[in-house]
Amino acid sequence: MTKADLRRDLRMRLKTLGDSRAEKSRAITTAVAAHTAFQQAENIALFAPLPSEPDIEPLWEKGGHRFCYPRVIGSDLEFVAVRHVEELAPAAWNPNVREPTAGQQIIEPSEIALILVPGLAFTRDGHRLGRGGGYYDRILALHRPHAIALGVCFDLQIVPDIPCEPHDQRVDAVLTESSAPAH
Image (cartoon, rainbow, N blue to C red):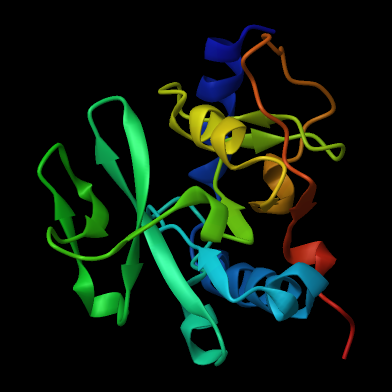
């Protein structure tokens, strides 16, 4: 299966989430908050979720962290400190994507301890299929080895294999709704 075929398949799978997205997102947020890397990190890179991605914004309720979000600059991402989730606005290049507004503090790659990474598909061993722009591949290559990268997705996005190219970057672990600790 090609990357294009896999992307098409995953987009169809994600349309089946419906109302279960909120419950599954809560479980994913619990799994992220329980992860040692999250608990120990001061600077954490989040992402503003698309409607088909896990809603990880309840992580704001967990104190003791400084959050930053990606902003697209040309063909790259930069991470910008955000004091409140309300500081995100629709991006000029895609109104479905929320980014930090201009004029905020850029966080240097060496300052970020944890990056939460979205994707269309992941394997259990950390291979990732993004949306095709290579933004996270480039940023993960830049942030390694000082930042831990956690893939964040729904169980239905876990696949047995992803076609990989030399520039593709893996994540250190993948968290889904099944990763949440039992209560």
